[in-house]
Length: 203
Image 1 (cartoon, helix red, strand yellow):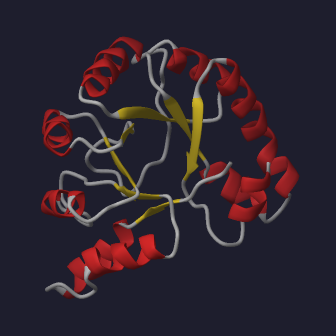
Image 2 (cartoon, rainbow, N blue to C red; image 1 turned 60 degrees about the horizontal axis):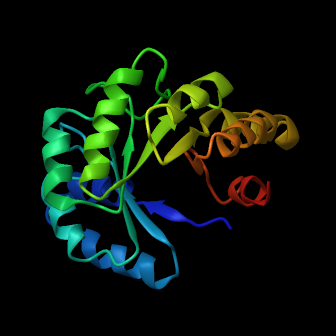
């Protein structure tokens, strides 16, 4: 069954651009949950250009659905997770200066690092997901880290979708089958919207 988690970063981006507290992040998060979504996702970055660390603490007391926090596992990020203890932590390989996530983990190169971080997060009671390209080999290495899930990076799907939806979805179906075969649960995200999400969710 497909479940929807809404990333609320852009609400915070608009608020920060305007100054003050308009739009009200916490109030809109509650409205989103009332609409029936199964999760809320945030990605606090070191420069706090959208979601601020203080937002994460405030959201902890507001979010009733699954709370998913994304980020690069720096010491500062891990300290935040230790204090908030969300339902899920999605680890992404973003360096501090990137505009948005643009690649998945090389789970072969970073397997030892990801294994250590994953075990630490699981000891806090958090489910762990690794942000990854739809690459069967990277998925197999991901399964060896002890992660619960992988999140398939869907920017490539969204880019090809308008030209050929079936061509766009094919590598993701193959990746999903490998993940399931490895005993992993699946998330997917990036550039999914009302135009392409329904087709992706049916697969």
